[in-house]
Image 1 (cartoon, rainbow, N blue to C red):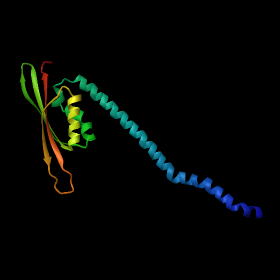
Image 2 (image 1 turned 60 degrees about the vertical axis):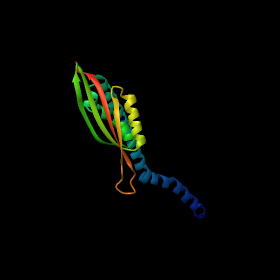
Image 3 (image 1 turned 180 degrees about the horizontal axis):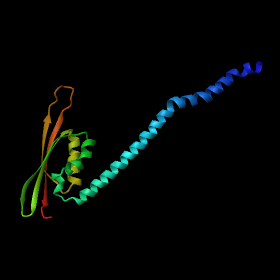
Image 4 (image 1 turned 135 degrees about the vertical axis):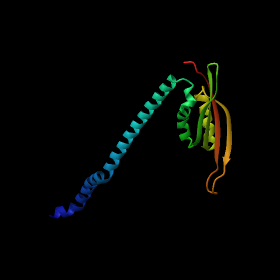
Length: 169
Protein backbone atom coordinates (compact mmCIF):
# COMPACT_ATOMS: atom_id res chain seq x y z
CA UNK A 1 0.00 0.00 0.00
CA UNK A 2 2.90 2.28 0.70
CA UNK A 3 4.09 1.83 -2.88
CA UNK A 4 0.68 2.93 -4.27
CA UNK A 5 0.70 6.12 -2.21
CA UNK A 6 4.25 6.78 -3.32
CA UNK A 7 3.40 6.70 -7.07
CA UNK A 8 -0.27 7.80 -6.91
CA UNK A 9 0.47 11.33 -8.21
CA UNK A 10 2.58 9.99 -11.08
CA UNK A 11 -0.13 7.49 -12.06
CA UNK A 12 -2.80 10.22 -11.94
CA UNK A 13 -0.63 12.48 -14.07
CA UNK A 14 -0.07 9.69 -16.62
CA UNK A 15 -3.80 8.97 -16.81
CA UNK A 16 -4.47 12.71 -17.19
CA UNK A 17 -2.07 12.93 -20.14
CA UNK A 18 -3.55 9.80 -21.74
CA UNK A 19 -7.28 10.25 -21.14
CA UNK A 20 -7.72 14.05 -21.20
CA UNK A 21 -6.62 14.47 -24.84
CA UNK A 22 -8.96 11.67 -25.91
CA UNK A 23 -11.87 13.34 -24.13
CA UNK A 24 -11.03 16.74 -25.56
CA UNK A 25 -10.71 15.24 -29.04
CA UNK A 26 -14.05 13.45 -28.73
CA UNK A 27 -16.06 16.42 -27.53
CA UNK A 28 -14.36 19.44 -29.11
CA UNK A 29 -11.88 18.84 -31.88
CA UNK A 30 -13.48 15.87 -33.65
CA UNK A 31 -16.59 17.83 -34.69
CA UNK A 32 -14.50 20.79 -35.82
CA UNK A 33 -12.21 18.61 -37.92
CA UNK A 34 -15.20 16.83 -39.48
CA UNK A 35 -16.81 20.17 -40.36
CA UNK A 36 -13.50 21.45 -41.79
CA UNK A 37 -13.18 18.33 -43.98
CA UNK A 38 -16.77 18.71 -45.17
CA UNK A 39 -16.26 22.42 -45.93
CA UNK A 40 -13.06 21.76 -47.88
CA UNK A 41 -14.77 18.96 -49.82
CA UNK A 42 -17.70 21.26 -50.64
CA UNK A 43 -15.36 24.08 -51.71
CA UNK A 44 -13.58 21.68 -54.07
CA UNK A 45 -16.96 20.66 -55.51
CA UNK A 46 -17.91 24.31 -55.96
CA UNK A 47 -14.63 25.03 -57.75
CA UNK A 48 -15.17 22.02 -60.02
CA UNK A 49 -18.70 23.20 -60.83
CA UNK A 50 -17.47 26.74 -61.46
CA UNK A 51 -14.73 25.44 -63.75
CA UNK A 52 -17.18 23.27 -65.68
CA UNK A 53 -19.63 26.17 -66.00
CA UNK A 54 -16.96 28.54 -67.27
CA UNK A 55 -15.76 25.94 -69.77
CA UNK A 56 -19.37 25.39 -70.87
CA UNK A 57 -19.87 29.16 -71.12
CA UNK A 58 -16.71 29.48 -73.21
CA UNK A 59 -17.87 26.62 -75.43
CA UNK A 60 -21.26 28.26 -75.87
CA UNK A 61 -19.50 31.59 -76.40
CA UNK A 62 -17.63 30.17 -79.35
CA UNK A 63 -20.76 28.65 -80.88
CA UNK A 64 -22.84 31.82 -80.56
CA UNK A 65 -22.47 34.47 -83.17
CA UNK A 66 -21.06 37.85 -82.29
CA UNK A 67 -24.51 39.43 -82.61
CA UNK A 68 -25.61 37.69 -79.45
CA UNK A 69 -22.82 39.10 -77.27
CA UNK A 70 -24.47 42.39 -76.30
CA UNK A 71 -28.09 41.61 -77.15
CA UNK A 72 -28.26 38.39 -75.14
CA UNK A 73 -26.41 39.74 -72.11
CA UNK A 74 -23.29 37.60 -72.54
CA UNK A 75 -21.28 40.80 -72.23
CA UNK A 76 -22.44 41.22 -68.64
CA UNK A 77 -21.98 37.49 -67.95
CA UNK A 78 -18.37 37.68 -69.12
CA UNK A 79 -17.68 40.80 -67.05
CA UNK A 80 -19.46 39.60 -63.90
CA UNK A 81 -16.44 37.86 -62.28
CA UNK A 82 -14.37 41.03 -62.65
CA UNK A 83 -17.24 43.14 -61.34
CA UNK A 84 -17.59 40.93 -58.27
CA UNK A 85 -13.83 40.76 -57.72
CA UNK A 86 -13.47 44.54 -57.75
CA UNK A 87 -16.57 45.02 -55.55
CA UNK A 88 -18.41 47.04 -58.17
CA UNK A 89 -22.17 47.22 -58.57
CA UNK A 90 -24.11 47.17 -61.83
CA UNK A 91 -26.52 50.09 -61.89
CA UNK A 92 -27.97 49.66 -65.38
CA UNK A 93 -27.52 47.66 -68.59
CA UNK A 94 -29.48 48.26 -71.77
CA UNK A 95 -28.70 46.72 -75.17
CA UNK A 96 -30.27 48.11 -78.35
CA UNK A 97 -29.87 47.64 -82.08
CA UNK A 98 -28.73 51.00 -83.42
CA UNK A 99 -28.92 50.29 -87.13
CA UNK A 100 -29.26 47.50 -89.67
CA UNK A 101 -28.17 47.86 -93.28
CA UNK A 102 -26.62 45.75 -96.06
CA UNK A 103 -26.46 42.55 -94.03
CA UNK A 104 -24.76 44.21 -91.07
CA UNK A 105 -26.05 45.13 -87.66
CA UNK A 106 -24.70 47.72 -85.23
CA UNK A 107 -25.60 46.87 -81.64
CA UNK A 108 -24.94 49.32 -78.82
CA UNK A 109 -24.97 48.54 -75.12
CA UNK A 110 -24.94 50.92 -72.20
CA UNK A 111 -23.49 49.57 -68.95
CA UNK A 112 -23.48 51.69 -65.79
CA UNK A 113 -21.28 50.50 -62.94
CA UNK A 114 -20.75 52.05 -59.49
CA UNK A 115 -17.67 51.62 -57.32
CA UNK A 116 -14.03 52.65 -57.07
CA UNK A 117 -11.92 54.10 -59.87
CA UNK A 118 -9.27 51.37 -59.77
CA UNK A 119 -11.89 48.64 -60.14
CA UNK A 120 -13.46 50.44 -63.10
CA UNK A 121 -10.13 50.76 -64.86
CA UNK A 122 -9.54 47.03 -64.39
CA UNK A 123 -13.03 46.33 -65.73
CA UNK A 124 -12.40 48.45 -68.83
CA UNK A 125 -9.05 46.70 -69.34
CA UNK A 126 -10.76 43.30 -69.20
CA UNK A 127 -13.45 44.51 -71.60
CA UNK A 128 -10.91 45.72 -74.14
CA UNK A 129 -8.49 42.80 -73.86
CA UNK A 130 -10.71 39.74 -73.46
CA UNK A 131 -13.72 40.75 -75.57
CA UNK A 132 -12.30 41.95 -78.88
CA UNK A 133 -15.65 41.71 -80.69
CA UNK A 134 -17.04 44.50 -78.47
CA UNK A 135 -15.47 47.95 -78.72
CA UNK A 136 -15.70 50.64 -76.07
CA UNK A 137 -16.76 53.83 -77.83
CA UNK A 138 -17.27 56.10 -74.85
CA UNK A 139 -17.07 56.27 -71.08
CA UNK A 140 -18.67 58.81 -68.81
CA UNK A 141 -17.58 59.17 -65.18
CA UNK A 142 -19.68 60.82 -62.52
CA UNK A 143 -18.81 61.31 -58.86
CA UNK A 144 -21.45 60.48 -56.26
CA UNK A 145 -21.48 62.37 -52.99
CA UNK A 146 -22.09 60.28 -49.89
CA UNK A 147 -25.21 60.83 -47.83
CA UNK A 148 -23.20 61.31 -44.65
CA UNK A 149 -19.59 62.10 -43.84
CA UNK A 150 -18.63 58.56 -42.86
CA UNK A 151 -19.37 57.02 -46.25
CA UNK A 152 -16.73 56.97 -48.97
CA UNK A 153 -17.25 58.73 -52.28
CA UNK A 154 -18.19 56.44 -55.12
CA UNK A 155 -17.88 56.81 -58.83
CA UNK A 156 -20.41 55.90 -61.50
CA UNK A 157 -19.02 54.91 -64.88
CA UNK A 158 -21.30 54.62 -67.89
CA UNK A 159 -19.65 52.52 -70.59
CA UNK A 160 -20.98 52.57 -74.16
CA UNK A 161 -20.03 49.43 -76.09
CA UNK A 162 -20.67 48.75 -79.77
CA UNK A 163 -20.50 45.61 -81.84
CA UNK A 164 -20.79 45.19 -85.60
CA UNK A 165 -22.06 41.85 -86.81
CA UNK A 166 -23.50 40.29 -89.91
CA UNK A 167 -27.17 39.39 -90.05
CA UNK A 168 -26.74 36.75 -92.78
CA UNK A 169 -27.19 33.29 -91.31
